[in-house]
Length: 180
Image (cartoon, rainbow, N blue to C red; front, side, top):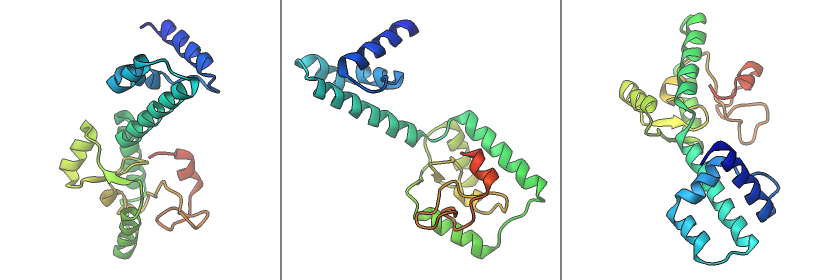
């Protein structure tokens, strides 16, 4: 399907279902690529509510897949390079053992601390660092990142405003960098 045809189909689906926003291309593709969803769509006439439910389910599935995949490889490479140069410019400083342990404990209790996705960058990291877990927000292997004095946690503290999950102040330049 050409880009123009896909755009028309997305606009028509939005109109027919009475949706407030256009259906994302990956959601549209997911609906028609998933045998269960496509079977449901053609198995019986659907009410608008059933159609909206199908679209919402596929949107959630796409969102979950994207979250599980972590940052794209090019972003991971850029993030790693930037972190390395910040660390080098600062003299290769590492945190003390207590800070390192506190950071790792915070990561261990975080919902974003997850098994590394199966991508090439993560596979290389697993082999090089002998780690299996990454931060789902930034894609970093936390056993390494937590040692670097120049790095911070991208997640806000769950109860303390202005702090990261590591219990350290959110620094404006780190906030503006988003994912690292």
